Length: 403
Ligand code: PHB
View 1 (spheres, rainbow, N blue to C red):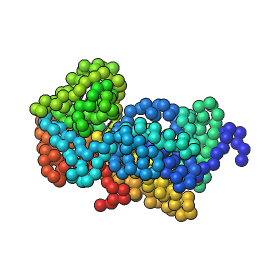
View 2 (cartoon, rainbow, N blue to C red):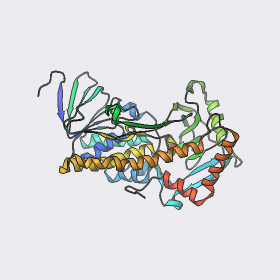
View 3 (cartoon, helix red, strand yellow):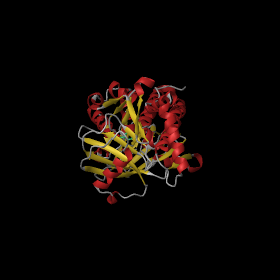
View 4 (cartoon, helix red, strand yellow):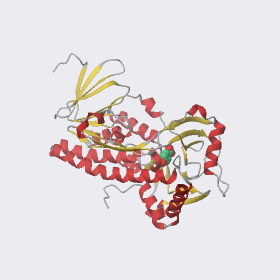
């Protein structure tokens, strides 16, 4: 039907709002099953590619990138990590994932996952429109939802679909489409944030270092031989301008200092950002013909490195149920999505908030709080059960595991 308010109308089984890793991986998985998608995102491809995000992939997620045919760059340029270091009271403690649970993780930045997926869409002829505006999602309580948007050249477009997926990240507009009286939002704010830097310096440690100190948390991660990623706990209202390089290095060094004489390798700071975070879940994850996936439905603090992994798990389950729903099983197949996705979401919510409170110092904490926390850290690293718990949670749960 001609519609004077739009310049083009396209029809696909699944319209995806959000072209980050969740949206693109879903499009990739559906494409492999012969199901057409159109993905739209308000950001430009360059903006997504240059926004630094976390860097840890579960082994299953890394394997999926290769086995589903996205590409095998993760194996060539990623780094397999068989453990992490937990530092506290000035001492290092290694958690050996391989020995404890037989699994590992891959250090492979989310920006690289995004680039691989965007390239795979280009290569496979998938449709992705970046830099769109005025996105509207309509008629989600019917079997014929529509998405309208304005392209960067000002033209107006409509996508007619059977299902719409909201994979539009932590500032999701799709999640607001679930009626207010029918949605529940669970969440927790933290009285601290992370100050993140990218520094041109050699690697300081072979694996990630999660450091607790009485001055607050720090995380030492890596990007390449010559570029390192580090974070330290700061006030959520901290301004990056108040932090010159010398002050940043002094703060980081103080948080990792210890009797082993450990010191970070310093160098010019290329980028600084304050990253606020929270724990958040919105239920239900589906409303009529619209389904939420990834950060649009839930976010976790970055301490447990779960966010990207959870999003990739959501879309693995979602692709499976959408293929069945569109293949003749009907809308009922979608009923499985929320329970299968949410079980892992709440496990990850628990682990992420546990690891956050384990390693950060709360403003206004008492000497009792600090000593109790050191007792907890001692319980974690000093018992096999404690180390195995951390290893089990950090490396993720094998796909489909319920127990
Ligand atoms: C990162 O490398 O940016 C990173 C790694 C682990 C985390 C968070 C961020 O828990």
